[in-house]
Length: 124
Image: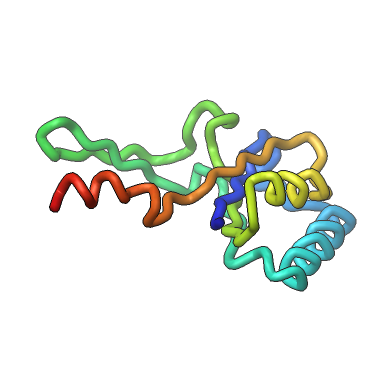
């Protein structure tokens, strides 16, 4: 199963504070371990929301653009990885080994073809 692992933003990440050498080295070793195990498929860190934009769509398809930074740091994502794991439990085991201090990580499974079987059948 594929999952997306989302590192939630903190006040430090939103302020563009880069990790210390020790934090960077620990995360690099952890990411190497994920890669050697064949778990990680893709991933990257994101710049603070001050470097981003949001597009809101209304009911008629119109849109408006909001420049960052965005409020509610706890709702923002600071980085992501896409993993291939055997189960959500395996993903949890890997996340719990991460050298993260003072942060939150969210794991979200991707939809697969099997999730749309009922929709495909009803459309035939």
